[in-house]
Image 1 (cartoon, one colour):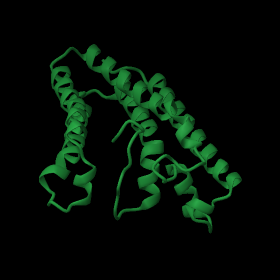
Image 2 (cartoon, rainbow, N blue to C red):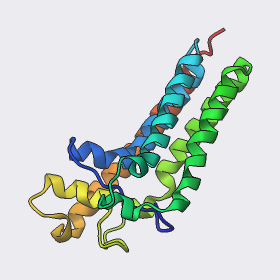
Image 3 (cartoon, rainbow, N blue to C red):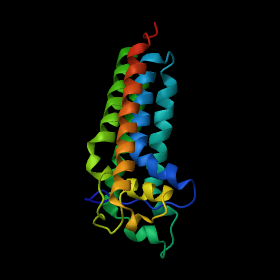
Image 4 (cartoon, rainbow, N blue to C red):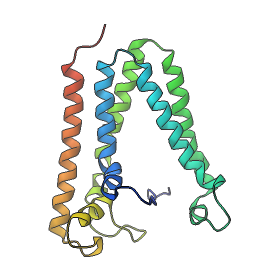
Length: 192
């Protein structure tokens, strides 16, 4: 992570799903939280899932420090200032623990606010989704790399029109996911 956003280094897995994780993941999680906020009768379950999520986030942020050797490539990119980024998952875990003891209405409100924030984050940086030019670090946006997985071009030689098609598809999917989350949250009566 840096002032320009950062970069993720991955290995293995299904590359198309890894790339879509950052593009559609916030909208999926936000929509699920919106639906759960009105549908779940046992709210401790989503809060335990959130606790696990934030704990994993903290673990993977600090992992390069204790799992590395002197020549580990990620350690060279990892700065001490990134320890400040660990405050977010720690604060979120503390908030989850606090909300587990709060009244039902506060628990539901917190889930709705977090769901709305996550859905908003899917649209807050649409310039990244539609970034055709190379980024400052010489890499390409996830949408451009994703499009190159399905076409006979590498990311560097991907035609502009093909890129725009995939970027629009991802943008439309984000809106559909948001709509499904809101519809699911509003259509279901709140449990008593």
